[in-house]
Length: 399
Image 1 (cartoon, rainbow, N blue to C red):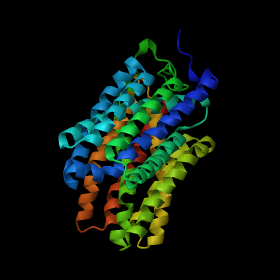
Image 2 (image 1 turned 60 degrees about the horizontal axis):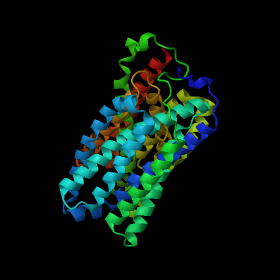
Image 3 (image 1 turned 135 degrees about the vertical axis):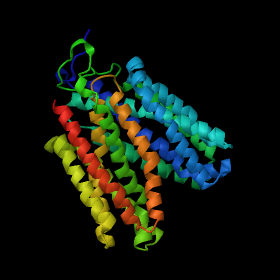
Image 4 (image 1 turned 120 degrees about the vertical axis):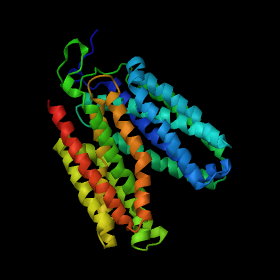
C-alpha cells in the first residue's frame, strides 16, 4: 500500500506517543554526553596523558565520526530510522563504559570513536522522526526538541558533577549511565514511528520514476556549508564567551562565567520559544530574524568596550543562535532523495566545524589580537555565510 502523504493525516494518539518518545530521546541524548564530559580530567588522569593528549584523542575521534555521516543515508534507507536509532544507540551504550574503564590511550580512543560515530546515526534518525512529526502536527516542534537536548546537557552535567563530588567511581558512573540509556532506548523504540514517512517533503510534488530532479543535486553541499557556518557561530560563542571577560575585561573566573550563562541562557529561551515564534511569523521569517539577532548580538558582544553591553550582546546572540540549527535539521530531514542524505551532509558540516573552528579561534586569540576580535573574525563572517546559504536553500525549496 502506498504511503499516505503526511499532510492528509491527522495527529492521532500513536503520533502523540511517538512525539513523546522522540522528545525523551533528545533529552537523554543530551544528558548522555554531558554525563562524561565533566569527568574528562579524571579520564585524562586515569589514562595518564596530558591535556593536549586528551584534546588530540577527542579530535581524532571526531574526525573518525565523519564516517557516520557517510553511512547514515544507506543505513536508514535499508533499515529505517527506528532500527537505526535502536541499533546505533545500543552501540553507544556499549562504548560508553569503555571510556570509563580505559587505562590506555588506545582503548580510550576506541571508546570515543565508537560513541561519536554511532551518535551521528542516532542524531540523524531522531531528527528525521522529529521533522516528520512536526509536519504531521502542522505546527513546529523542532526548536523545543533541541531545547530538550540542551536541557538534558544541563541535567546530565549537574548530575555528573554531583556523582563525582560524592566519590562515585568513573567506571561505575558510566556503566550505570549506559544501562539507563539502553533502558530508555527500549522504551523509545516502542513509541517512535515504526514506518518511515514518504521521502517527499510536505506539499512537494511527486517525481516520476523515483528519480530526483537534476536541479536538487547542489543542495547537499549547501547543507554541509550551512552546518559548518552554524556551528562556527554557536560553538565559538559558547566556548569563548568566558574568555572574553577574563582576558579582555580582566574579570574574575566567577564573573566571567556570566558570559557563558548569558549566551546559553539566551539559547535556552530561544529554543523553547522558537516554535511559538515560527508558528506566528513563519519559519522563513524566523530564520531571517534569528540571523539578524545573532549578527547584531555578536557584534556588540565581541567588539563593545563596555562589559555590560557585551553581556547583553551575548544574550541577544544566544536568542538568535538558538533556532539556527533546529531549522536546518528540519529542512535537511525533508530533503528529497535518499533518506538521511540531507542530514548526513549537514552533520558532516557540523563535525568538520567542531574539529577546525576551536583551533582557528585559539590561534587568533594566542596572537596579539584581543579575544573579542578573534571571536568577531570567526563569527561575523560565519553569520554572513550562513545567511547567504540559507537564502540559496530557500530558493531551492521554492522551486
